[in-house]
Image 1 (spheres, rainbow, N blue to C red):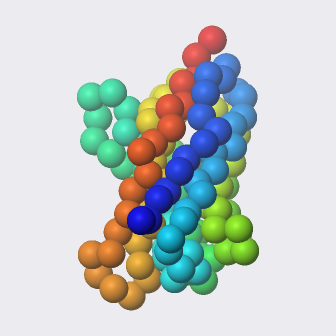
Image 2: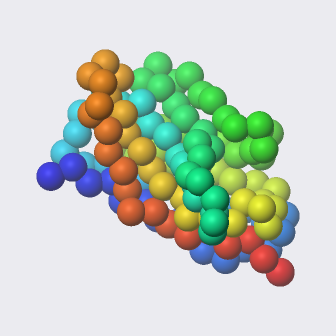
Amino acid sequence: QVQLVESGGGLVQPGGSLTLSCAASSIIFSSYNMGWYRQAPGKQRELVASITTGRITNYTDSVKGRFTISRNNANNIVSLEMNSLKPEDTAVYYCNAQHFRIYGVNYWGKGTLVTVSS
């Protein structure tokens, strides 16, 4: 059974940092493009950052220069380093895995809550 398990969320003050991790199991991790999404209360889920199997990265404009996505194919982990956090970064963050070639093969984690508040 495929599992994506996020960790690292929590409460942090504005300007602080957190690193989220997503551990994947039962997939050939290197064959999946990985992404971090977030959903704030009352808002739609949005893509925050993604990294392809070839390690090409992409970020939504609001996090460019502050967040860094990376992947460790040996350990089946994708991470999101978040710096200079703002209250508007408060959301549930979800890990996503999409097969690089087979359309529709797509998995989600259950999410981890990030709260940025003083």
